[in-house]
Length: 473
Image 1 (tube, rainbow, N blue to C red):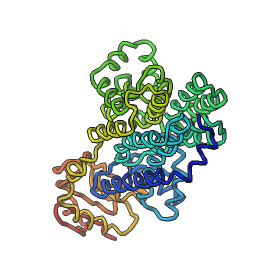
Image 2 (cartoon, rainbow, N blue to C red):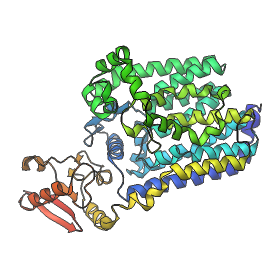
Image 3 (cartoon, rainbow, N blue to C red):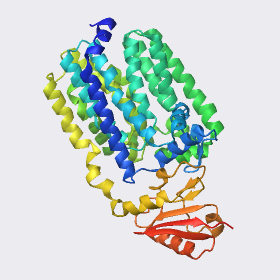
């Protein structure tokens, strides 16, 4: 097996890996930026962008989009250092850049893990291709922004550091993973068990288990309750497990005393379909004796299987990201032992390409993502007329383009009176494309109401796009 020195000495010679990472970063960044420009971003991006902007301005990061403090969401403290980028220049494109770089950088530890396992150069490059073409990598990059993406290269780096016995790198990597999302502490604990029992890395396994457990308790018992509430958390996340009850205590009781409910949900067609789709890109490497790294994916996959919301059971969103590093480790181990069904670089890359073409959501750029193009120019013009940082009421698809302010909302209740509307300085509506949070009829009624109010002036009207601005008394 190659030593640490032989691996690191090869780095300057591997310019093609740097080129691959650079091209991948560019493709991911252009894809996510273009999706955003075409008005397909949603509330999650608006939430993170607004909170990070508020942090950069020295203000409490309580998002008006979701009525949440940023730490009440997932205790993701990694967002605080990201605010330093907004101090240079506040722009949502920093988030796309960070996410694209993070996902592409996962190729580097993948490459070194392949070399460390004894694979030849051409097969190590094939592992890089498998990682970058895994559908979840590309698709999650199109899913707004989520700090989970930063955890992917950190998990791979943690494993590489453990195998090379680089404890400082291991600890830093674990720290980054824990800072991305509280629930990732479960993945860290599971990884620690695998390192402890099957990788003969007792110290590293112990560090992962202890740090993951401590952070899980701190995040869920102290930080999240302090900045939020159980009701808010249930409304924000746990609705995906609604069949388990309406509170944490109910969920625990059902888990302990009514396991039949859980089994009925686990053994379903949609779960079988999810597992098949998740594993098909690497099924050629799944030999029983090399599956031990999959101990680390148990928390992630179990949470997805237990959920009764379909959003967690596909390859479109980011919920399966923590599983990807360990699926890559399985295929590296199987290939290094000569037991994989595919052994040639061309065959491996072709297999990955086929499944990327099947499951990758690049096709949305010629269909779904063009839905709002017919009044694109009018929407951009109206946004440009919002000159100040005053409050805005708009639609959910416009919200991520105007979140650099303390108060913005896309929640319009047709029954609310004019006093509620007077809380906003701007009202920007795209009646033709209202998004999921409203209907064309409700927005048309709102336009008529505002036209009859002396407290608002109609500043712009074009192609069913309306911008009202509050009059100065």
